[in-house]
Length: 340
Image (cartoon, rainbow, N blue to C red):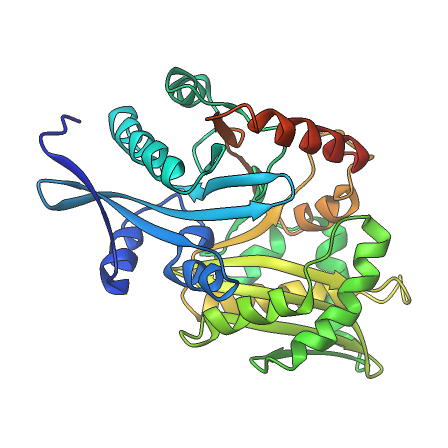
């Protein structure tokens, strides 16, 4: 694509931002308008950058200033595919922005197919693979356009059987909620999941702010799965532009033979279909054959519903000062400790 008069301007109109992304096939909720609102509520500085060619919007990049113990950097989560020359224009703009904001590096998480061509684009612009990822680079997705009957047929035999058993069990109840107070119920169960899988939990305020940011547009729900009145499984699901995302999950192992989680996921899928969603994104999964990975068991669970793996190129870093290498070492050590 030849860029005649390429400019980058901040977008302040929600409709313009969302309408552009509505035409993009490969995307996630992390570039949505409301994800930007969530980060603003958290106190983060954000820029909704629009890339224009003669006043025509040809690209977007939600950019977040991250300030943490490991350093200050600019982060672009799950950016949609851009041609190399447009990405260069964006990168040059981000460099200037990083200089003003005293950021030591730029980090971009692309939702670009993992292939040599895409990796080379970033390499030629001076990027290197980040030591860790901040959002999934490997996901499990399910086409939910088929009928419910066909979706069940395409599931793993055991998964299909457990869903049907759960539907027959009068002690299992699945409820969908839009009550922010139910975040506390989720959080109590979430803590048990964190202890079991050894990952860092999101605090309650983080989850409540995220829930509030999407709630106004009816883009989020909490699903609560009970057995004999006790919460056993829960999920926070985002519905955005014909896509559904299993963004946060929590479960208990108190009743390992009672398939509450299976029925809960099935109810989520059915709700997504009712909302006109065409794709269900189960979010992150573990790399192949890594049985030590914290998500190994959860990955098997997700794959049982049918679907396919989607792998993006690695998160990319552009170092801008020597301070970056302190962050690099810190994150490498953390990755090793977490068996990621």
